[in-house]
Image (cartoon, rainbow, N blue to C red):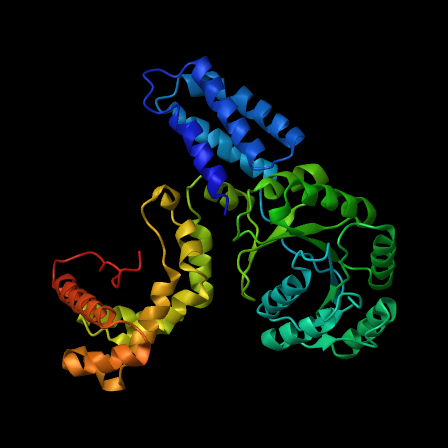
Length: 439
């Protein structure tokens, strides 16, 4: 996410470091590099122009030029301006009515149907009763897709006659009242491009349900075209916010940095993976920090709190202290970590991780490790010392991994156990390094 932009901005900041004295000239050079970085990230030209003017004005002030650490002052100015550009603070969904309606709109292929299911799961986790409504009767298998996703998140899907969007929405509203639903999420039809027929339909659906929220789903991979589409939807529907999808891909960042300024409407959520729990609330200050390689510890902590079992964490701490950690415990920890998302997405949230160019995260390594451990017997997982050469051969054959992988895993596990014993002794402090060659 934003890798290219992050690297280019880092070059701009580096140009100010190590200077004997910061001058008006090298500040202007750094500002120019920031400008080029944003334009290459496909940020709207007018947005870049205003952004750079604000940065330049503040960066050339006496506070920066006379500072003991002018490069840090400059970074702070850029961070503050990025935060301002994206909306200062995160904005939550506002539910006024009951049942409340959230209307999902956007172009075909933006991930609208999947996002509706992700949002349903998130709202349900907050203790609300949710109903998904399938009003996309044009795209082949759209209704069936929503039914499958609804089943995966355990949220009912209203389909009506599967033919008439207006009739479906009208009947769904009555059903939501009868079933005492808190929030109704309406998945509307998309098109390959904005057209008058599409707009008239969604306008009519809006009149029927009077939604508290109209969320436009935007594919962050398509750059400035997405911003223009967002403006067109906002002009006709007065959207309440945006959901950016595919930010875990090769998105350059232009949409995230442009859409608020162009439309005046906030980004409320971002899709960070294809998994149904891969929807995060959008916080401009945290996103600005991630863009600048400062990490996002707050989001990491929140993600851990949502996914980690507190009692299991306490049990694991006791086992670490007593050096009683087993392969079963390790498998359990892997499952907890996987709930938080991919290792690469977790790494992104750590400050300075973007500068670790020589560190790569091999997601396949985790799967290989799991295959090896699953091929062990319960006794072998709890007492790996009994694993001799013949057992290793059996485990390797059962996991489909070479014998060397099994040997290396056992050696690293033994090293970790020895490290635990040292750390658990009185007067010793620290944490064992994560083993198994994951980095």
